[in-house]
Image (cartoon, rainbow, N blue to C red; front, side, top):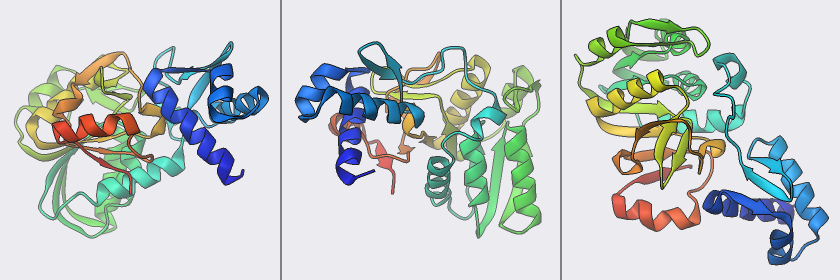
Amino acid sequence: MSLLAKERQDQILQYLIQHGKVKVIPLADELGVTRETIRRDLDFLETEGHLRRVYGGAIRSAYENGEPTFEQRETINVEGKQKIGELAASLIQDGDTIALDVGTTMIEMVKLMRGKKNITVLTNSLAVGVHLSEALSSGRFSGKVIFLGGELNPDQNSITGPLCENMLQQFHLDKAFLSVGGVSLKTGITDYDVNESHISKMFSKAASQTIVLADHSKIGVQAFSKIMPIQEVDIIVSDVSCPEDWASELMKIGLSWNNE
């Protein structure tokens, strides 16, 4: 794919994030290319998971029937999640007490937690807990892991419910790392599961700093359950740049965007 095509597709994605939908004819006129070229761009972006094709154009991707299972999400945008995981792991300081919520991006982050010392990790994710155990056993980082108990959600490999919430109330955290379903200026930080969203919200309230991990497919998306307003987030870690029309607003509220 030529650089010109990549630049054009980036412009389409920026417009999609701003407006939530795009139309073939206006895009072709604005970008100075044929309608067929725009259709090919939209088809390619759909295969990459950035959007969903509809008659005459495209709309932002979102899960219409709830979020896929944990196992299904492990195969989606692996490269982007690895980049986010590396960036997020670099934000951990020796001696930190952190929370990792449910999400496949968290596994990539744990894989890259190398050389960190005296880290205390809280998590409600079965899969993340397994990878944390392996990382501790192999000496990739030192510290301890506290696994929150409660009700099992087998589809998402997570623990939620009143027991989990009561246990979480006993802790103060330095940083909460949240893997979310949607990030929007208007509707804030959202996810697809009500119970998991509540645990993520509690992680944030217990932490001095909230760090949201969101790949390109989450930007501009509104999921079902609200976690928090975007103003309550300190850092967003992504595999793409901040949307141009978001930059001034994020600067006003003091939110940092980290994608490199």
